[in-house]
Length: 295
Image 1: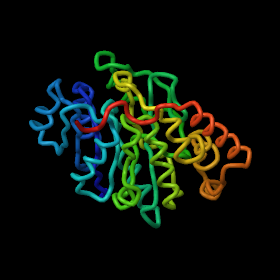
Image 2: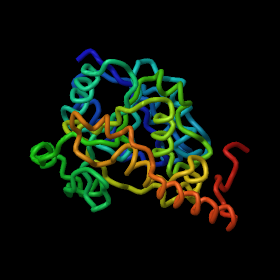
Image 3: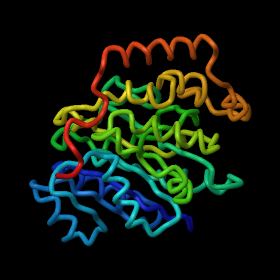
Image 4: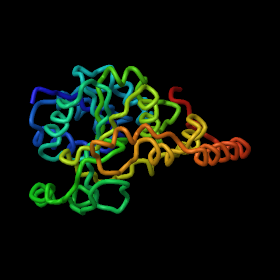
C-alpha cells in the first residue's frame, strides 16, 4: 500500500509498554510509517530511548496531558495522515492495510476512522473482549497473533477513540485537540464534536484494523478534569447524546449509516441537556485543569 501514516503517541513514564507498542508497529505493519512520540517527563529513560531509536519526538519536562502533547507532535508530521495511538497498544497484522483500503474508497478527506480494540477487561462500548494479558509479564503475544482474527466483528459506526485516523488538513481545520480538557478526559468526544461541526460525517470503525489494548490506566496517576461537564457546557449536549443521536456509536455500519447520521438531538434530549448544564453552573463545578500547562 502506498498510504503512509504519521503515528503520534503521547507517553508518560510508561517505557516498557511504549517499547512494545513501537516494536509492534515495526513488526506488523505492511509499510513504513513515521512514528512520533511525545515524552511527558521521561524520568524512566523514555527520552534517551526515543533518541537512541531515532524516533521523531517532542518533549516536556513534566506531564502536560494528551491534548497539548498531540498538538505538539503535529508540528513533526511529515505525511498526509495522522494516526493517534495510546502507548499501551499493540498493533496487529493488517491494521494499516485495512485503514488504507478504506481511505481508497472515499471521495474526499472528510473522514474519521478508528481501529477495533481487543481488550482484556469488560470496559468496551464497542470492540472485542478477549484476555491476552494486562501487563508485559502476562502478555501472550504468540497466542494473540494466532487468534486475533478469529473473533467475528463487522465495521461499526461512531469512530471516536484511538487508534484514530484523519487527514492532516482536517486536523488543522478543527485545531486538533482542545487543551482546555487537559489532562485529557473527554478530549476524544470533543474532537468528534468539532469534526461534526466542520462537516465530517464519515465516522467509521474498521473491523479488520485490530489492536490489542492493555488498559494500563495511566489516568489513575493524575487529577482528572471534569470532562463530562466541560463537554456539556461547551456543546450544550452530553457525550451520550452525541453518541446516540449523531454518530450512532457501536451500530453496525451499512449503506444507510451515513444518512442516519443526519439526525439531531430530539427536543427531549435538548431539554434534558439544558437542565444538566444549568445544574452544573449553579453548583459551581471545577472544569479546567488543576494546574497551568506552563510555569
